[in-house]
Amino acid sequence: MKKQIVLASILLSVAHTQAQEKFPELIFTDIPGAPRLQMPFLVKGSTAPVMAERHGLAAPALWDWDGDGKNDLLIGEFETSDTASTIRVYRNTGSNRKPRFTDDFTYAKDIKGTNIAVKQWCCIGFTPQFTDLDGDGFKDLITGQYHPGEVTWFRGSKQGFLPGVQLKQAGDPKAPNNDFNYWNYSSASFGDIDGDGLPDLVTGGSSLRVSKNIGTRANPEFGYREWLLDIYGDPLDVVQYTKEDSAVLEKYGKREPSGDTKLSPFITDWDHDGTPDLLVTNSYHYTNLPAVTFFRGVKKQGKIRFERGVPLFRAKDGSKAFPGSGPRVFAGDWNNDGIDDLIMGASVPTLNNGIFSGHLAWTYEEITGIAAAGKDPGRTSAEDRKKILEKIAKDSTTRMHYLGKEGKPEYLTLRHRGYVYVFLGQKNPAKAAPADTAAVVDIQRKMLHIVKDDNPVVQYTVSAPAEVRRAELFEVTVRFDIEDGWHIYAPTGVDNGQGMIVTSVTFELPRLWNKIGPAEWPASVAMGLTEVYKGKDVTFKQRLLAPIYVKKGVYNIKCKVTFQTCNDDQCLPPQEDTVELNIEARIN
Figure: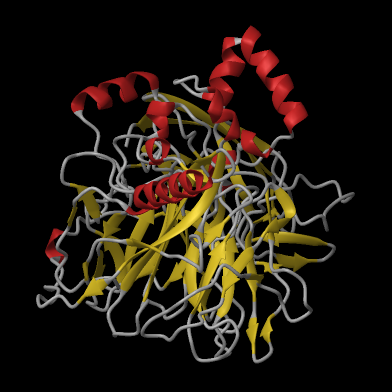
């Protein structure tokens, strides 16, 4: 009897192992210059897969953590906590040519001996990226965060990584009434996008955006998050919608610019043509999403745009091509053969105390309705599980929440775990052809320019785009041209109590339209006890963001401009105008 039980256990273990590793036949997109990927394998320790636990997401990276000259495997984890989204370090006990790992791991620590971690309260986890941000010769460790949009920088040094600090970003992620979707899901990667030699910040979420490095080589600082654009001037998109989809989207306005809300970018020169490319993952929750999208970078006049995205691989039979959800990628040389490999983590569903569920892993969550990573009913106590079962019996909404669309009671044991797979690369005999820069469309924006010239000595122009797309960041400017000998008063606070009307520009925005960051005023000059503006081209700027789910139509933005004009002898009466901007919003 005991032999039968042992044999059954072995057979069950073998079956689960096969389910973890058995992929459908994959078709890989042949990208000239890029490695030719092979079928993936699961990374294992002594007796089980190496893994991330907690809430299950796995963000892999290669790094020689212990300084022995061999790349170790790092796995970023996700936990709803201030201190538990950490990095597991699996030490390479083999060689760089043939990496090997045991079941043992440690947590990555900074030079003070504290676990390297960031605060997360949803859906992203620690996603380790390495780049030398400050030009000191040491690579730094950086990760994004879910919300409010901070990116944390652990500086590298001879002794190791320093405690984390937040990167300087234009706008304040913690400001009240911030736009959630602009800052949310700040998955982060770095590369020189504008050709100035400094690493720029690329973030994911519902849009792929770039924050250009506006600092210096030694002191990085990042600007506002502008869309990354394809060669046609459109925001990058991981999903191609049908005409039927587009009709629904146009009617109801429900669509992210990128096609998903959980994009995670990785910048690398994948095709080795000297221009950065993008490998982008997503929630992988829906049937129309590829596991990884490749965007080829095209450099024109020093600036980078991207060709339309293509899936890096797909299943030949049209089924799901990769297990689980929430994949993360890292490009690196796994086996030290000089060819890039693809290391890919994913959140895989397990049941009944950690048994891999082939059915749930190889079926999209859109179909099964099970909870994504971050919601693990299997972590609840037996007592709480009993209470949940009582609620399920009475309430269909609770039943759906915990048991999905299939309603199986064993789904109450669901635990997401993070597994890591490797696609080895082989040398591609075809080199990348030069990108067709002639195909890059120059962007010619239609602009609104409303001129106010009823003041005898001051003329000003309010300018804004005539049309914007959903979730687009755009700029409204007010340019004052002031006659010689006259001035208007600057809102610096120096003029308070002097009786002058200081210059102000305020906005009345449609519902869900938001300001991003503070207004930008030009430098003022001192005049006695006051600060003033003089001369031509005195320009005020304010960045605004269209809602992510805006419907197609025309939206009215009211811009209220107030100022008073004086010279050394007299002041004209204060002037207050309301300029109306009618901006057309369209789908992407």
